[in-house]
Image (cartoon, rainbow, N blue to C red; front, side, top):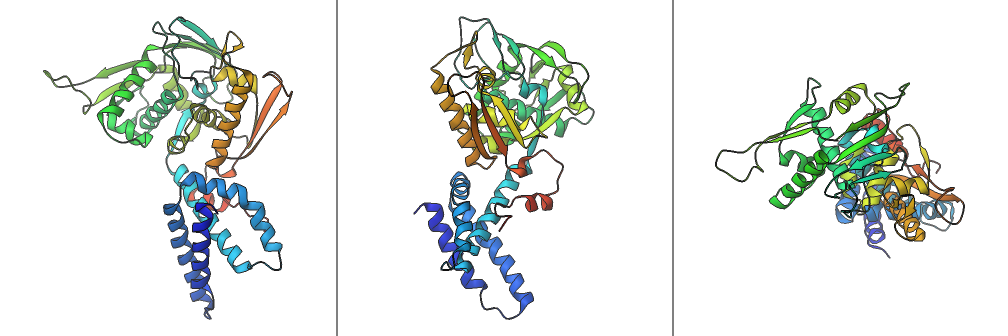
Length: 382
């Protein structure tokens, strides 16, 4: 018996004990709601979130079948379903409480590598993904999905702090760490600073830049993701970590932000994803904001996340496919997708596809918290 099942069984038994045999219907309903909320919160605190989602994915059909079994304890099974549903609702809303608006041009150009290794021999590289990008950097450093997360934090802070739409915004390291859900400290300050410098120093050419959603034209943009950084510190000191600095976004990005070519991501959810590829895939799939189902060719994904060099795989094809599969499993484990499947050819990357179905709660639509809760229901057909 898994840890989740052990805890859920114990909590469900407690739920049944506290809610049965109450004669007054109004009192019974009140006790039912209060007990369900308290015990679902207890479940969230007692087991890892990933384990909770994995358990839910694996046991939905079993719980449904148990309700059809005449010999099953239906009150106990219904209690398990109620507690599990409520726990998943609460956690999913936690993920969506602090969503960050990201520009679609950033996500759908192949900017960020899920293979974080420098390529010192290559000054100019081209990554062919959903939208291709040319990348120039004299040091051979690459932008990874960590830079994507930092860029997401900057975007979020730009929207929160910038009231006049200008490209510049004043920040602190602590602001970025807070957006990312990371702890304060010099090690993380240093990593953030290095990431900011890469975002400013690495030149990129966006080959299919669009100024607005549903734009009639696409353009080529020669740019950087951060146009300028001005660090500040007191005269005579060497440490500027605690002081404000100013970041200037490129004009095209500030304009595109104002035009609304955006989608939402949860940086908190990204923290729960261990692999660079799972983080990048979450970011990319989220950019198809209006699509509940997203189908992508494996060759496109391999290029998008820099597993190809001049069109050739940098590792054995089966390893790339395995990484994509594992990344999808991670996304399923945190509840972002309901399912995924491979189709097309059985070998290679070309004409071989992965199709992912999003959890309805993560579809990019303007909903209120109450409406969100109503959408998250694993057992709607009971």
